[in-house]
Structure formats: structure tokens, C-alpha cells
Image 1 (spheres, rainbow, N blue to C red):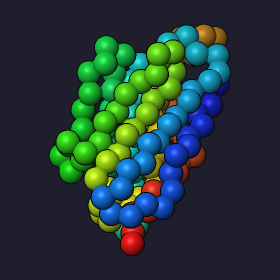
Image 2 (image 1 turned 120 degrees about the horizontal axis):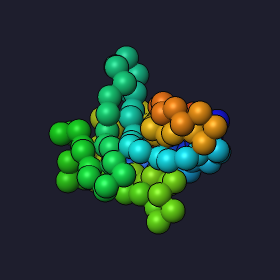
Image 3 (image 1 turned 30 degrees about the vertical axis):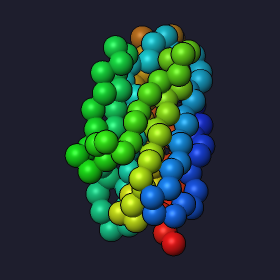
Image 4 (image 1 turned 180 degrees about the vertical axis):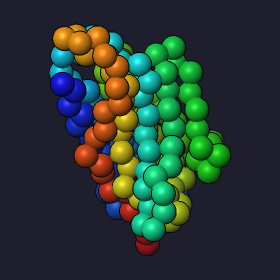
Length: 121
């Protein structure tokens, strides 16, 4: 199985910055795409940013130029650097990893437990 451990959420004032981290562990053969989603109160879950194994990135229009997704050197960690935060960025942020298991060579999505980001005065 795959375990995802997220960290880095919290309360920040508008214009501030936060960095989210997500580390994947387990009997992993290969990690493919990694990404961050968020769900704000009363809204659907949405993709924030994603990065594939080749380093190509994809961002929601609302965060382009403010957020940066990256992968750690060991390729099993994904980060989300969030700058110029706005109140509308307030949400629970979830890490998502597409991983292939050693035992089965099956690929599926795994989700972190979520971390709260609140942007407020």
C-alpha cells in the first residue's frame, strides 16, 4: 500500500505564503503523476496543480503565477509553494499521487488526509 503524509497548512494573512509538502511511502514500484487538489466550503473539489514524472506541470487558472508545484529529488515528495495568498484560496488541500505497487504492478490514485489552509486577517 501507499501512505501519504501531508504537512504545511495553517492560517496566513492575505498576501502571505505557505508551503505544502506530501511524502509518499510504501511498497512503490513507480510514482507517476503527483498533484494537489482543494475543496472549499460549499464547492466541488478542484485541481490546483499537477506534475508528471517528466516534470511537466499544470495549474488551475486561478493560481497561475502564484503557486508552484515541484517534486523532491527522491521523486516521492511533492511540494506546493503558495505565494500571494488570497482569502479565496481558503480550502482543505489534498495531495494526490498516482502510484504503481511492487506486488501487483497495478496503478491507482492515492489521497492524503488533507491539510487546512486558511487565508484571513
